Image (cartoon, rainbow, N blue to C red):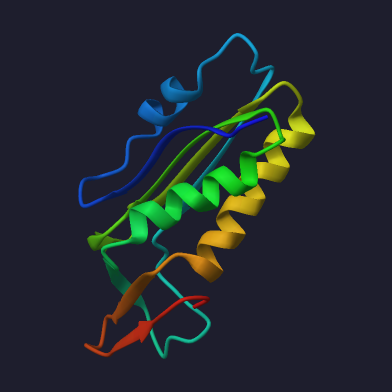
Length: 143
């Protein structure tokens, strides 16, 4: 069965969880999983407190995000809405929103997890981690 990806977006605007929930609303979806990746105030690699992240994306990132979602949902009878934010994000802001609807919970969880794990390794998005003391560090794919 072909993938049903209803949102696959790179956005400089704040991400709206409800928009993603509405996108996968379907009579076939007995299970809906959500994942919201938020900016946190710490990182194992940081010397101190993290105060913000700045995300930047390759021009092909949105196309790659759609491909990631399609691969995860193909043959899974899942409906997907996924977005990744770019720009300056403060602690608490949503950086990634993934919503997956499916007939069964196991499929919804599996597709959602596959998407976020593949985003971490394959999506051409980089982040600059800003610390309270003024230090910063760039992290690329897989970071």
